[in-house]
Structure formats: C-alpha cells, structure tokens
Length: 309
Image: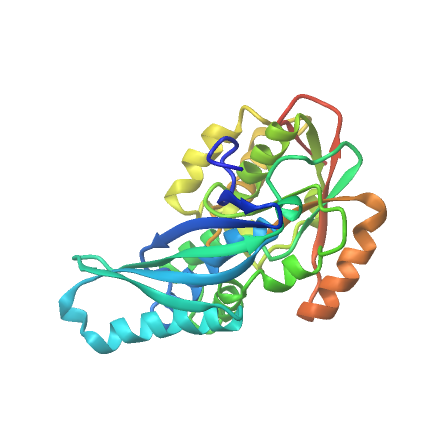
C-alpha cells in the first residue's frame, strides 16, 4: 500500500481486506547518559512511527551496536529500557540482533497493524484543517545547551521525560475523528515535517508562532546561536519553503533555529477539521494529563509553503 513515495513514517502492506501491517526501523547514538533512559527514548522514537500511521504496535526487534568495554550490564539496561516501552504498548519484543561497534547505537524495527481504511499518512491535509502538535519543541537545542553547560541534569528532566513519552495517547485521541494527515516530528524539525505534509497534500499553512509549545529557554538559546549542527543544514533547505514575509533577517533566523531544530522522539502533528479540534484537545488532555497545541491552519496556496504569523 505504501513505500517511500512521500517520505512517510512506515511502509504499509495489505494482508487482506481487514488487515494491513506497518513496518518501520529507527536507531541512533545515545542522546542521554543513563543507559535505561537511552533505551526508552530510542524505543519511543521507533514506536512513534507506528502510532503516526494510526496503527497499533504488535512486536519489535532490537537493533544494538555496542562496544564490549561498556559491559553486559550497561547493554542489558539499554535493552530493558526499550522492552519496558514495548510492554507499555501491550506489544512484545521478539528478538533482535547485536553487533560489536566502537560507538553504541540502539533502536528497533517495529511491526504494527491497522485496518487498511484507517491507515493514516503524511498526506491528505485539506484546506480549512487545523494542525495540532502534541509535545514541546526544542529537544535538540536543549541538548546543545546541556552540552555547553547552560542546562543541568536536573533542568533537563522535562526534556528527557518528553523524549521518553510514547505517542500512544496522542494517537488514541484521534481515533474516531477525521484525522486527514498525521506524521511525527523528528530529524527535520517542525518546519521540515510540516513541509512534507503540505507538499504531498498540495496546500500551504499559516504557522502561529505565539502558539508553539517550547521548552523554557529554547528561543533564547536559538537567538544566542546555541543550536545542534544539523539545524543549519535544515535551515538552508527550509529557506525555500518557509516564507520570510515582513520579518527582518535576525528574527527570521532566530525563529528558523526553532522551527528547524531536530527533535528526538518528537510529538505527532495532526491535520483535523477545525470543528473537531476541541474534541481532540479534550481527549488528549484526558488521556495524557497535559495540553496539545493548535499551531497552524491549512490554507490554499503553493504546495509545501509555510507562512509564519
């Protein structure tokens, strides 16, 4: 049913009229020091793709590259972190593969299932839809600030908690609603993943800057140039589709630093009819105990274009 045509989150294979399987794979190097939390973050990031497709996780395979000198106990903690996340999804770890490597890497291949008619894609957003985002932005910038000594292990706890949070509740909240398009926000930042959704949907969007949910200090760090290296590459790519409008060069660059910040295990970006937005926000609040944000509206315009207001 779906390959890599629109840079979507999973491959989809129809088994029969009532069942489709979704397949995804993701892994990366450590983003936190604690091995258990590293495993939990990496697993949440991989599982997120399945939830972005409107599917339920069934099973996962571990992918682990590990230097022998770190020891079995550390490797066990990484795998335990991932296994606990899969268990929280009512799914199972059914195996995996480990290789020796100088730099640790961990992630998962995840299998999920959905009715073929209920599979969500990153295309299909319609003019008049609103766009909801479900996690705070700025994970990459906050990590850079931590490495630079501006944040402490204690002040980073909200960021780590967000990265560990499964997108399970975010997906459950749109069940029964007309979610026209869904994706998760990861390595290309909010701007990049929104652009992919809009381009494949043949529409533009007005992004409401003041509504963006940001971790404390993110915009200040962006203004000060405290950003991950990848941000600058994403900004160069995104300049062609994020309109500068009446912003001066400095303001535009500062905001692009946030919009193009790579997210690790980011939230879901969901296109919904405007009259269903309140239902979604209420459901999400009831399920997760916190608020999602209405960040944009889909409008008629050049495919993939983003206008900041």
